[in-house]
Length: 420
Image (cartoon, rainbow, N blue to C red):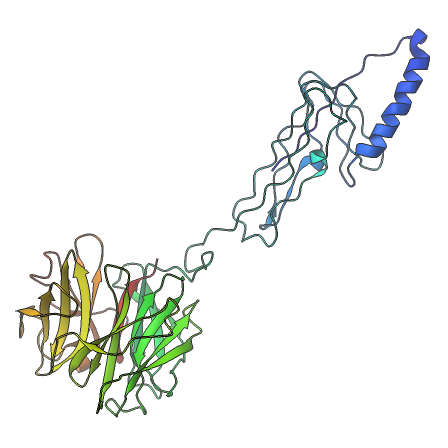
């Protein structure tokens, strides 16, 4: 976004050319009045090529002034002294080879521009009336929005950016609300926000988080009627946020199952065709509820996917053409089932303590770390509320479960996602 203007030098007039010189001076005065830019700093006389006047610079609305125009002189020519008051020198009528300015580079590190971007400087004003090679300055190029910074600065049109985001609740607190942790390695988490969000009933449990195509974050969660774990609840809810701190309930979805007592632990699942589902446990069976619009405010009725009765906290991922479900049997263990379809039938390929995770684990959540490793998170109750275990051979064998560092006890039923 630079502007450049070029001027042709004059030879010293002879004594016999005084009359013609007077006429030429009159013409130059008129040109200076018509073409001078307001507020510009006078150009200095140039030896060869000439340096640009500062009027050729641009103001970058993205947070800083741009560099002054890199060009501004005609090859071989020299500028006339500027008129008093800061006006730019005007070109003579017969310039040849005049070039437009290139413009200054946009200042780096700017925040998103509020308007159209750069403003053209005085050097970008049109040259003398149509001459051979004379071209009008292009003016300022619109400034570009700032790129997101490290550590969660909002990206354009989207939410904060963190490598990993962990949504949980504290079931030992005076109120069970949504808590957000973040991490660079999906292992060492630090508290980002204890949001205070409790949903439509004033109590929130089992939050499952997802980053949607609109750049916002959504949690699906259990809506108990009171602080107790297992009161009657016949619906689940969805809330959204653009910054992970301020949450708004967007819909409460009735279970739609006759005689329902418990509607528990909705988990997000995005199918291979892009369809979005909440996988919800209703009285010991796993049902899917399909999102019917992009804003996630409308969901289909329940469809049983063939897991249960007798199972809760079902979490599903796909690998290739295979669906993998990790679900807790009510007896004690988290088991592994596979299917060629979301709606089953399911083949339980890992039963009882197949993974070595031991008893009383629940609320399983799986995360692909992207390097051939899958990380499993689970709620381990009094043994250490949030634990993890890794597999490098596609769910065949697992490391011994360990309590997540720093997070500690009392943090329950979490879901971890990649934040960016």
